[in-house]
Length: 486
Image (cartoon, rainbow, N blue to C red; front, side, top):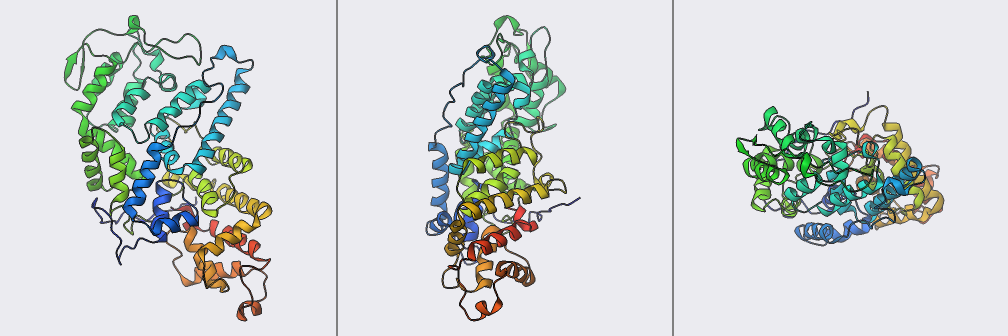
């Protein structure tokens, strides 16, 4: 089986603010690192402009953009119940596709916000294939966007009452007559505390009783309401606290009695998603303290993380394997390609083919990510996706390929080796490891142009062959293992 192995986490930087220096310069490489992690990448003009600014200020701009970017607009049929459909199966599937396409369009335009929303989609998992209703999907996704950098405690509180989650994790079946532990278990194991971290089976059972009553299910796809008569009003003991607890009290007790474990778990998940698959616990401890000190507001945590010297440490660069969505959207954005309907369709269907179907993670634990993204079954699909984007650009807007190469080079525009290196280093976080690898890439870039035109200096990026040359080089780059990293 083919495996892409990111290097171990050898970073030594702390949460102290990063500063431009000779050892860790604020350059194209680190600017791209920021845009790839807190977004899906950016075009050459955006990263070039960022290099001229203070890195802390760029982070603030990105975080502020997330906070100010509006959620996706409400679809026409956002509030439909099943009674308003003529063919529920087909129509609901088409609405899923339509809304997912809108989300992909926003990923192309509002990368930072949607990158964080996608992270939460894989944290608070609810599968459309299990709850089926577009109205519930829309409400669920609005929570992901609204709370992306909001208050984590409020996020947890609202998510547990959302119809998508109530149906997916059987909360709607949880009554005083027959408690269902499914949501209570995942509330602790996945969403807040982490597996086997400060809770017992009794805590789960008692929490399930406290969460009873959200059973007001009359018509599929309609709002789900609280039914007093189905709520267990007896005393429950949760984390050593006994009383007639209900939904609100569960969250009060959880965040009061287990606040440190909650903050460390969520910051650990943030670290794995945005920094490195191997967690630095000292960094997590600092971020968790910030989360508690900020009364569970997430924005200060991400500001601290993305401004830190740890995040920009050389051993963090190029250490995360791109998810299929990351890989496809970043190829389009960094290539400067047009965000067309056919491109968005390919991202959506390609995601499903490569095991990252939007609104349908594989199970309640979400997509495993990291090394699971790339194997002998998926790598050819990833290559095919890159080919589609590159050759669509070549066929429809070939000048885009040339403009990218020109944006990355200056006086060296007639030296194929330097042009090749500029393009390679733009798409691969840490460049190639040997001179021979650059030479092989240069040979691909030279294509069928006779060597004498390079030797004489006659060739340049204004030649008619240049679009094909850049496209072939990009295809070569997309086949390299290093291209799978961000």
